[in-house]
Length: 82
Image (cartoon, rainbow, N blue to C red; front, side, top):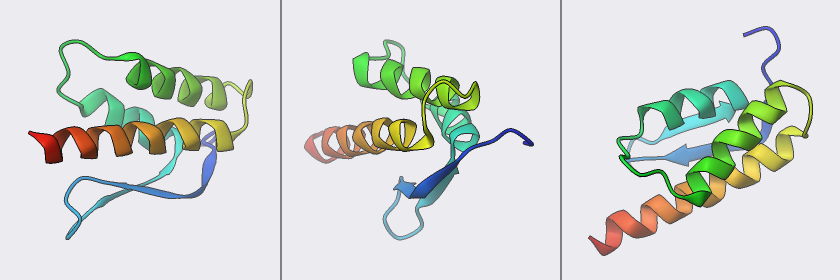
């Protein structure tokens, strides 16, 4: 995507042996759209909003990266607890 914004570093999600590496705001939006969540929580909504705002040029990629990392950590902790 031409107006995509790169993250400072990729965010790794999923299987630690074969993680999905999310390197841009657009890739993060694609990942978020694939999450099977019937009731997205506040962290999910914050990540999606900040990625969209980054693509629109309203916030720096660092902010979206931070939100996506926080969501990935939360999901990882949730899956480990289950």
